[in-house]
Amino acid sequence: MEGIDFFTLFQGFGTMVEGGWILAVARLVLIALGGLLVYLGWKGVLEPMVMIPMGLGMIAINTGTLFMPEGGLGNLFLDPMLSDTDALMTSMQINFLQPVYTLTFSNGLIACFVFMGIGTLLDVGFLLQKPFTSIFLALCAELGTFLTLPIAHSLGLTLKESASIAMVGGADGPMVLFTSLELAKHLFVPITVVAYLYLGLTYGGYPYLVRLLVPKKFRAIKMKQTGKVKNYPAKVKLAFAVILCAILCFLFPVASPLFFSLFLGVAIRESGMKHIMDFVSGPLLYGSTFMLGLLLGVLCEAKILLDPKVLKLLVLGITALLLSGIGGIIGGYIMYFIKKGNFNPVIGIAAVSCVPTTAKVAQKIVSKDNPDSIILGDALGANISGVITSAIITGVYITIIPLL
Image 1: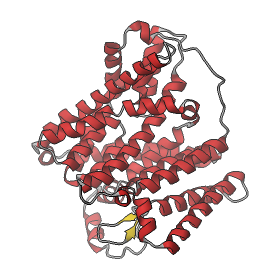
Image 2: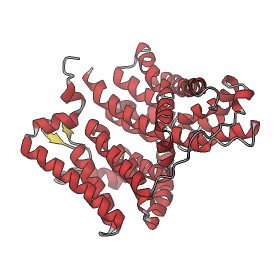
Image 3: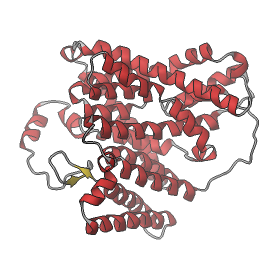
C-alpha cells in the first residue's frame, strides 16, 4: 500500500506531471486536435473514414500514457521501434496457429477487435435516456466482480489471480481476457476458457435465476412512461463517446486499448460510415469471435487444465456470475421501490453486461408473463452501462492490484 498515491493510481495525471509542462501542453493540444478531427470527419469536411479513427486514436494515445515497468513513459498500443523479431518469426514458421495466437490473442488484440464490434452494436441513446438508473443497476450487477475477489483470495489465490477470475462476474469475455493477460498470465488460458464456457450459460441459466427470485406479478409489470422520450442526435452520441473515451483513458491508461476499441466502435456507428460499420459489426466481430473460440479450444490441453487451481477457477467463475445476476436483480427491486412500483425488477439482470444477451433475456422473460410489457429500451440502457462499468473495473483492478 505504500506505493499507492493519487498520481500512481490515476496515471493520466501522474504522467502529465512527470513528463514536464512542455510535454503536458503538447498532449493537451493533440487531444484537442483529435477531437477537432473527429468533428470535421463527422461533418464531412474531411474524409471520415480516416479522420474519425485518427482523431480518436490521437485522443486515446495522449490520454492513455502510463508509467512503463522498465521506467519512463509509454503506452500499450504499439512500439514503432520494435526490431528483434527473429525468435518470434522462427516460432511462427513451425506452429500452425502460432501467428494467429501471437499476433492477435496473447496481446489482447482479438479482445479489442471483439470490443470494437460490440461498440458498433451499442446505441448509447438508451443509456442517455436514463443514465442514473442504468449506472446504478450496472454497479449492482458487478456484485460478483467485487465479492469474488476476497472469496478467491481466501481460497489461496493471489490477489492478481483473484482479480482475474473475479472479472468473470462482469460477463464480458474481452475484459476477462485482458485482465488475466495483465495480472495472471500463467493462468491466462484456464481463466479465459472458464470465462467463455460460463458466458454461454447466461442465456440458458439466468432465466431460471430470474424466475426463482422475481415472482410473476413483478415480472409482469408494465412500466408507465413518466416523461418525454428524448431522441438524441448522432452528434450528441458521438460527442459522448469521444469525451468518455478521453476521460477513461486518462484515468486508467492500462485499460486504454479496451476503452479506445469500444468507443471507436460507437463512433463508427454514429458517424454514418455504413461500409466500415458493416465490416466491423460483421466480418471483424464474427471472424474474431470465431477465431477466439478456435484458439480457446486448441488451448484446452490436458496438462494445462490439470492444474489444481482450475477446479477453484471453475467454482469461482460460476460464483461470480451467480452473484452478479443476484446483484442485478437486487438493484431492480431497489429501483422498483424508489419508483414506487413503476419499474420492472427483471431489468436488473440486463445490467450484467453480456451484450446484448442479457437484455434480450430480460425482454423474453417479461413477454412470457405480459406480452404488452416492453422493457427492452431500459434493459439495453442498463446493458450498455454494464459494459462501460465492467471496463472501468478492469482499469481499476489492473491499476491497483499490482500495487497491493
